[in-house]
Length: 517
Image (cartoon, rainbow, N blue to C red; front, side, top):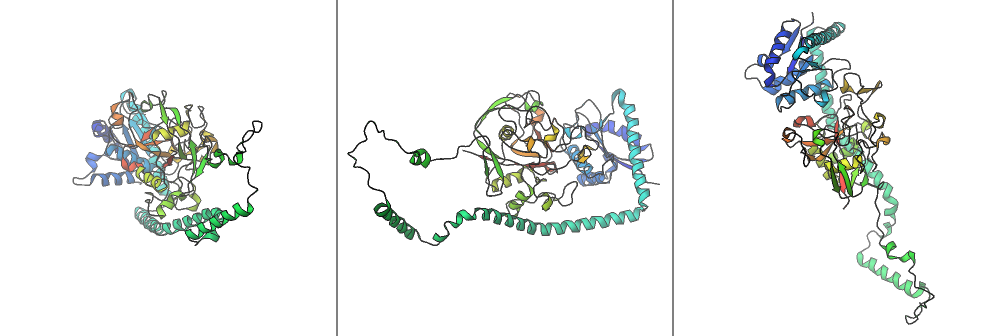
């Protein structure tokens, strides 16, 4: 007979009465083993360690949502996001997260794709029956899986232990060899860039090692030879002024404009960084409309902002680019080297041109500083994304999911795996969707990964957003990701993580900017 179904109850302390009542109902079923903190945590036990282990062991996580829990900081948010990260590792089709509302609260964005139930009011009993049906489905899935494997509890434990040991050994090997692989790749790319510039450098090769005085002597000798032997006939005397019918004309070949010519930058101008090979696009100085009257409260009111000209990375920083910084000791390794669908993501040549992930805002700042640039401000990021016309999306006002790496609202459950039109939607190679470019040529500013900016979450001037929204200094993210909704990938949308550990995830990256002044 299979073991009882392990169900973790994630809730805010203010919601304990309602959760306790449901806990007792589930316990009476006999085949369900609900995990409730006030009965399941022994006295003196470490709180965080015990809860994380309980979530790891759970077959189902019930997330109780209320106006208390969605606004509360601390353990409930940590539990919720930890459970979300675990859900990313579950096979497609497995029920794991079940949101239950205890009052008329707003569903968090990243849970809005899951079917939820209202465990309050006149819907309470119907929701309870639906919950039992879902738990029964998961219970039968687990029982069938155990029956097909034909393994008893002891052999399953030994198998899991062996797999864990092998995984730890592989991880150690990867970390030991990663820096050597990265350094080798960085050296190869540096040699390629230097080889591309070699013809220009060879012009000066004969003069290498020649002293300054020798060079000056050669210059004066050449000048003397030109004036005395090679120059054309002397010009007429200065007393012979030009006649009125022969106006004095300065040849364009020697005009001051030609002698002091400087590049004229405009929309479409690009430059390449010698440090990491990144292509940057130019954003001219001027005003643009920041924010949106149709967006969330934290996007209001829209406002006219003036920015000086600047450059911004055309794409998100890639694994290969970030590896150059790591190889020089200026950047720390990403928190995790894999991804939800790949054991080896960072350091894998297959994903060299994919965005670096599992980095927080401080790591992004360190990279941009190493590269001679800086994280863009919110205003710089938004202008580069939507231009001066105030586009809703980088390409315009009409949504088109084919122009970005994105899992649409029609993705089948679970949305976290990013299935779209029967194709797996996950991280894409940077620049893979050129049709989604902004007016300045910036790519991937909608979808693919959320991007860190330099600012911290705060209200816009004259905003009517509630004070709760801006109570902490949380780093801001822009652009949406591969697994969010079309509402999230609007150019004016803002997001943040309230728990520091959540900043390390598989759908957050960054790009850098550079002042043109």
